[in-house]
Image 1 (cartoon, rainbow, N blue to C red):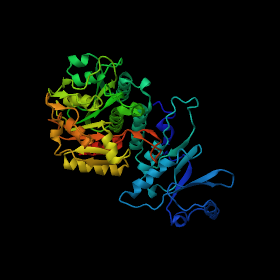
Image 2: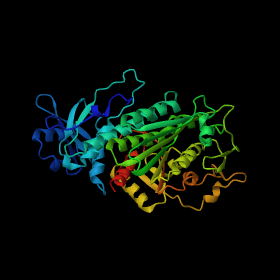
Image 3: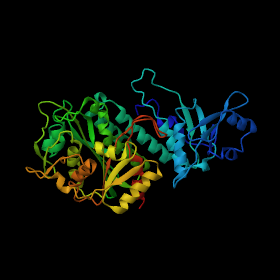
Image 4: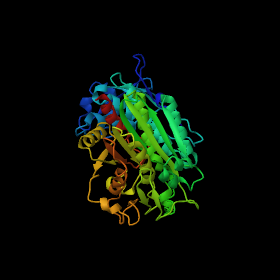
Length: 473
């Protein structure tokens, strides 16, 4: 971890002896009844502070000795199918606001205790690697005994890892550094990690990955992590690892490059999910493939109208060099598909069209397996990691036709960009039993309950729930 604190410094397991300041939840309109157990002096203090249970409003309760004896958090008027989860996520708003100290849930039965611990951990994250005063002593939560502490810690560690990778600027997070991060994760969990680097990509038949990254002074590579029993259910994750995207010869505008350090957000999400799976010891055969490259501009850059033969043998005409993510994913998908995995999932900051459709906070996914798609949607809702299904089977297949090659990497016109990208990827999946693709944003534009502004490995927690159920079945 390269953030200012470690997850185990903000979340600690209950040992029955540790004490902490209780945090009480109070709904709007009925807060006095919910807090009737508090002393009358503290209720009067809440009244004096204008507390009414409004959403995210919090008040510190003073003790007679000048100490903090409690915290009251307003939860508004909870409604919907996942009240216990949505209420628990509000604990993530507190770590940036509370003074240093040790806290606990006043009533763990008032919400989902595991989600409350996860929310606290995610809300505690701060990326201060480059700050002169980087270290910050913040509040600590004693996880409720009813919480699944192992699951909560795995989720928080995984998301912190993904955020660290995305938030690190590209001068310190190129293809080699991404490989180092994957190797460090592999070493922690006794996984095997290999890499095909530079011109070896041509020799090993990964021409699209090589083409995208060949103009950079930092060699492209395909990172390959494997873990688990060889004969267990095969789960393969692929994460787009474009460590910076200029757009290539179809160059982006200056404003369009400002957040391009996050273009490896798919790789970060895949590694975050991999950590959760391995930490939980799920009985799966896990494989993680990360095509890592920098889409740079130089004399060796690939060009619009170039035709490149992919690993799968499909020839691709380059209609736009800024649609490079789908190219590197195509070679990785072809490799993954060769062993016919039971489940194949891709994560990528792939299209601006996905943001136009669903905004930055909801990740669209594409899946033709009705049962799996339903499970993915339900899992996202259950853990407050929202995803939304977009169509993969459409009338738009012909939009990728090329006059000179088997297909183009883009379609003419600006319609259905995220859908067209998903169709492109699906053409490289022939043998996998189930496939889903996530077109994530990888970034939180403003602070939310579950984390600050900055990198976010979206869909990782949702898919951890899915993989847990797959492994359990």
